[in-house]
Image (tube, rainbow, N blue to C red; front, side, top):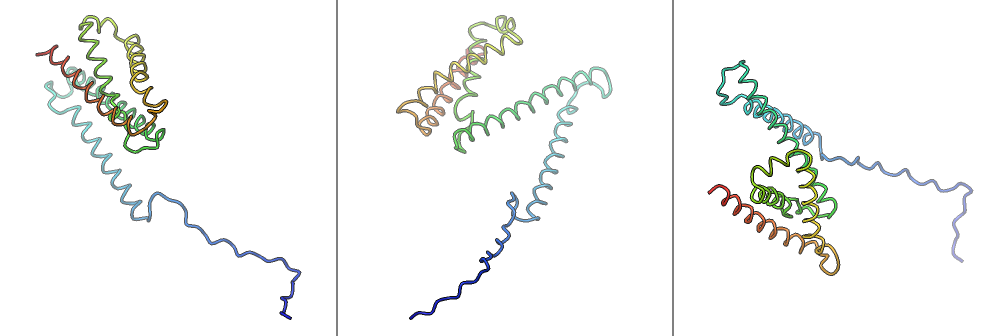
Length: 193
């Protein structure tokens, strides 16, 4: 007869789980330090270029009212550029997250070319006077409505039914972006030969 193991009254105690390494973006402290040094350097460089943009080649003498007026207009342009950069980055991350694809950006999909085509067509068909008459909120709302409408028309059929293929949508977006860019360049050329 085979020997049986004695059954103990004590429950088996499982060994404590091994400590798992903490999940971190940086593999080691050296990489973390390198990242922060690089970020600080790029931030300082950005501040240097921003100040340079504000004061470089300003035709007015430093400290005069004309100097500050020009600097204020340049600062407004820098703020607009910063807002556009943040919006572009947010839109890119949103596109890539929604589609789970690292290639897709609004630029590749042709949305930038669509915006330029709509703005150029407004000047081409309405003239400068018509565009100036629509300045402000009405122009913004009209551009949003046109962008959403044309986006739904252009990409709605690519995301539904048997055409619901992300790669096809990406290729069509690149082609439409190139085509719309060419059309807007043509209209701009006709406006200012």
